[in-house]
Length: 94
Image (cartoon, rainbow, N blue to C red):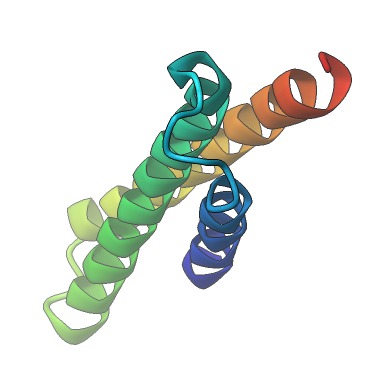
């Protein structure tokens, strides 16, 4: 899922590229918010992967397992918020 988040971040970045440098910051603000949320979800995914690998290769401590599950669930929550916000702000509020 983390790789998919990176792909969606690429879509957002490529959507901003055609804007001229003189564009109003208020136009770019929704894209910046979405990009920030996606970067946050991406980083949570990386942490989740790191904890899961550490748990698998280590002593299989239950705290590491719970940490990897928690970060994965946080990543899902961030993605849901970003998806709803993006749909509302960039699609329905034009």
